[in-house]
Amino acid sequence: MENLSKLPKKLKDKLLKIPNYQPIQQNGQVETSKRLILHPDIVTSFDDLGDVEKEILKNQLGVEASAFGKAKIDLTVENYLPLTMLRAVLKLEDEGLSSHSHVGHIIHVNLKVSSRQISTKYCTLIF
Image: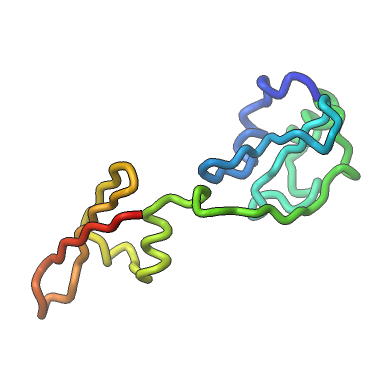
């Protein structure tokens, strides 16, 4: 696959977008072969692509439907935004935080509490 830098926007929108993760990777030990990691909620099979995307894959990149498959990928802490991890750990919903700032490995958050308690609590977390 050559010309991956000229990958059309229609196909780039379908790539998996995760922080610190490359959706275009080398496929095995063949230097000229690349693997495109598509977002699993958008594309689960070749048939999920539109006609334009199918033509791009077939004609420009030489990819056939038989090349599609599923694979597990390993994600680490680096693949998540600190606020996403914080919300998952503290089980905060959108109304649970009034604001936050992230500088380096320190996150400063303003937590909302119920109206019967103090209006806002402040917290600084270090990751």
